[in-house]
Length: 282
Ligand code: C2E
Ligand code: MG
Ligand code: MG
Ligand code: MG
Image (tube, helix red, strand yellow):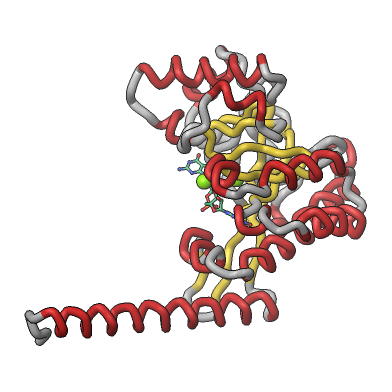
């Protein structure tokens, strides 16, 4: 039983902190081992053209097939990886695998994948490193992927919190890579700021599609109108039914992603013509 005086609380706090640090160190070691032992894999979710129902591309989403814990979702290990340079190792791994996968699909099915894109999520800490630019260049060279077919997804908060983000994104866009602002609307970026940011595409966060508030539809409309006025493409995230898709079509949103159009799936099952993403509704 813990003492109630100040010293007792301090000891408890100390024990908690020590346990937390030990758990984090263990998880870091496990991630490191997982990288060397090939325990990570990418699942791919299709991004569809709203008007035609055709495939536009994919987003690569990381999964950890842990020998004891089974399939571990990204939210369970990325926050810890982001506390160290492990997140950069994960980012390099993802860039290399995702670009090669898209080139492989394009070779297997040229008609269905000719202009298809691959979106990769990049953490703030990784974007803050100057070496990301060389790593992206290397992944493009090694895979043979055309730069504009690679989309780097970054979140709004990263643009605000990483002072180097703007310059690094500028350099990446100079290579020809596409930059997408992920989870838009959840941070503090105002619509007016959009025209000054180093981004090509806006991904409207899924919370906007799932909100029961009728005012939200007007907000989505406003975001799309502004994005288009600033020359940005728009992808709506989290489409789960036909009604949401119809609404997006009505307000001129060009691309959409969500369980209704295709769930994230491991690579072998995904091809534009025969895969689980083939039968997406128009
Ligand atoms: P995100 O980039 O916004 O990815 C979209 C998330 O929404 C994915 O979760 C996806 O499975 C989920 N989702 C897609 N469609 C629907 C839908 O219709 N309804 C609902 N409820 N959810 C949907 P996931 O795969 O768990 O990824 C979570 C986050 O983890 C991602 O959010 C991204 O920020 C991060 N992440 C995933 N892979 C990587 C990676 O390789 N590197 C980095 N740095 N971050 C990653
Ligand atoms: Mg994303
Ligand atoms: Mg998102
Ligand atoms: Mg997200």
